[in-house]
Image (cartoon, rainbow, N blue to C red; front, side):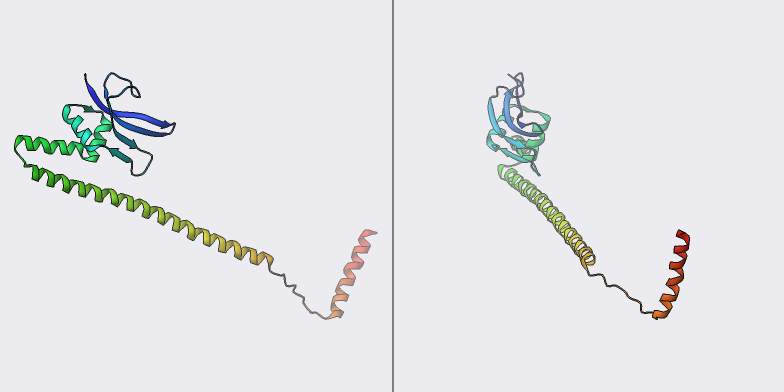
Length: 182
């Protein structure tokens, strides 16, 4: 019986969630499986991967073939690297202590890389929020200034001119308009 380590889809449309399972290669994607090894959620950033390391390593050593996506997940979690180091121990190229030290060093580097990515994501989110807040306060200040200008009392400008001149100029205009009407 050929066994595969593959993903079994769950979740609703547009929001997939996967279980990592060991199944017979002839069974359907979401059908019967032998053992559930963990879960994979691609909706989060970075993707959430939970695997039972020992069970998965055991199945890989027994010969279960991972699919392409599962191979990437197993590589990301270090299962394939651990298998590689165990092969070096069997051949005599490494001792168990050296292999454990190399794996611990790799895990530390991987964890720091993941934490760095999470920090950058939260930092970028904070920067976006700060920029939006600054833009909003500027826009509110502009609105307040425009409202103050609109609601400010209008001062009427009255030009003082001699009264005699005004009546003499206005009188012919009134007479001309009366003549035009007739």
